[in-house]
Length: 170
Image 1: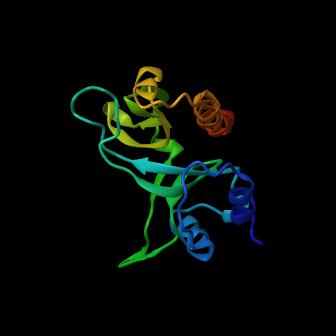
Image 2: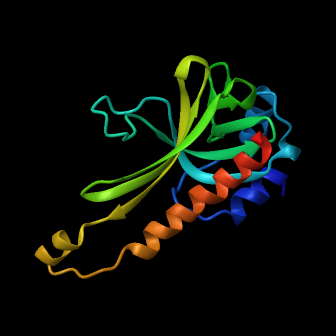
């Protein structure tokens, strides 16, 4: 088993996504990362456009395996694309700021890590979603399920990845 696959299999499965691990290694090399240097892998979504309403909600995003390297982030499922492998990378050398966002909607929520480049340009974001019906909605339908443990699991995954990013960016 290769290094990235080992990291991925030990990470909490927040977002299910089929992954071609040979393709992930190839995508890492194509983006300038050494797969053996991977620090953390996470099952998440990656996007590069925020909702224009100003809510901070993601406007796009695809399920991926996110991988943190000492020099940047790779988000890919390892699938073949026309010119190599499908995926996105964010080099920390171009990243000026990293911040987080948490959003609760009716019946769902997300935790995000944004990567901002020169001039405040959004380079992309990793995010994790969860179902979180409001207590009042659950009572309307006779459901009294407590979603806090699921929400905290998503928050802990965001913190785990953020800690790895901050350790190499400081």
